[in-house]
Image 1: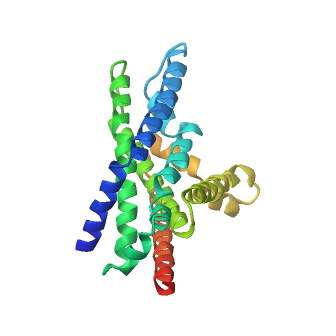
Image 2: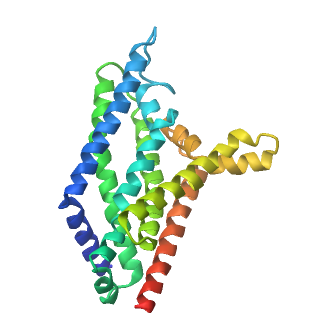
Image 3: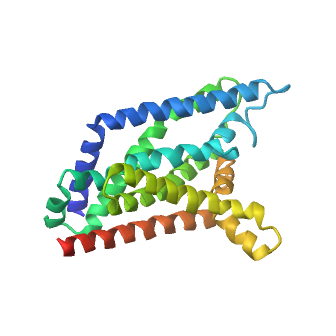
Length: 253
């Protein structure tokens, strides 16, 4: 536990002292700011603008459209592409693996460091709720569920990114692999629930892994335990595979 904490602090220090972290932060805020402005403009153009309910700007921002999925889809691979690939490029991975720490401690520290940065990126978006609050009531319970869902989905994406970074030889390769796995296996796969409507069992399976559907539920305050189990299972599986990959690298070294 002590080694995990030490590695976690090291990871945070390297993340927040890197210029890339602030490039990601600015890009994140600009990207989300444009999306939120777009939804506020749509809401204001309605004959009778509604700031709450399933079609309010906050609900649309967090899950009622495909744009809500693009943010973690793009930024999670960007946050994790360097965690192991950069260590390998700078030849510090071998030193890390020969230190008296376990693979589990290294993987947990890397993941928690990336997750902390990801959660920090979302903190300024609380201002969006204050903007909406000026013109109408805010469903704070629903907003809390939306943030919980965003962090849960982001955690799963980050776990995939950590695994890809452990397998890749460069940051660019890690980013592309993460983007393809997340976009193909976790996003596109869920679209099957809209395609395979003939077989109820098949449709229910694809609905279970439907990222868009999960985000829509979270955005209106519905926290489905099945979605929680699904994303925590993805996190556990990816981190377990990352640990195995590091163990293989340590034995080979």
